[in-house]
Image (cartoon, rainbow, N blue to C red):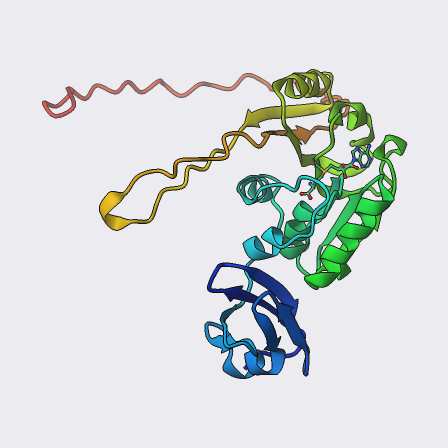
Length: 287
Ligand SMILES: C[S@@+](CC[C@H](N)C(=O)[O-])C[C@H]1O[C@@H](n2cnc3c(N)ncnc32)[C@H](O)[C@@H]1O
């Protein structure tokens, strides 16, 4: 039995996918005819129901990967391969507060919101109102909008928030916003950036070198899929060869002035005990 309000993924025999929130008495209109949500609720996950034209649909509980694939997009969204790695690097987990820009269609925002849990928070900045609204709808659709504060603002005006645990920028010229980062995050916070070209990476690295940042790292992640025919194992003919470079760094506060050491009183000389010399002969084993 699937509860009302839960997300369901319906997949046709041709692989067409529909991501929906289960509603009592609801219907899903597909290319193959109408599906009844009450029937889906009754049979449960992992089972099939038929449209009114008799076409079978598999009902699955969507994973985060499914939710990101289902994001309605007007911008390029980040790929799960980069998202997975950056979540670990940035240390995103239950209770984290993370700042992000730009929101775009909300692909990365969805993943961040999923991982921060109900005790954490995602603050996401987007300068374009149409993308800001689209991302809001996408987050609402997957039931994660309550974990996200959307800001329809250009980050050239700085960040309104402070004390975030981590910050991620997927914008074209992130080096222009580096000086706004220190007031937005905690000292030592992890920062991440996604950039498609090496020219942009060089520009960003120059900015990071000027500080106050440390531990810069640049990498890219490639996935090569393989055909799943057991007797003819070989890679797929095509692959996505390039998506973007990930750049990571830490915000480091300039060191505080070290406290002056207390003057140490000179100790009176004491009689040294006689030095003991180790006279043991080396054994055969120790040579
Ligand atoms: C490639 S999209 C981000 C995609 C997003 N990471 C995702 O996974 O869906 C880049 C977004 O950054 C926004 N943007 C670029 N510069 C910005 C700025 N200075 N302030 C706020 N948003 C900005 C753009 O409008 C665009 O929507």
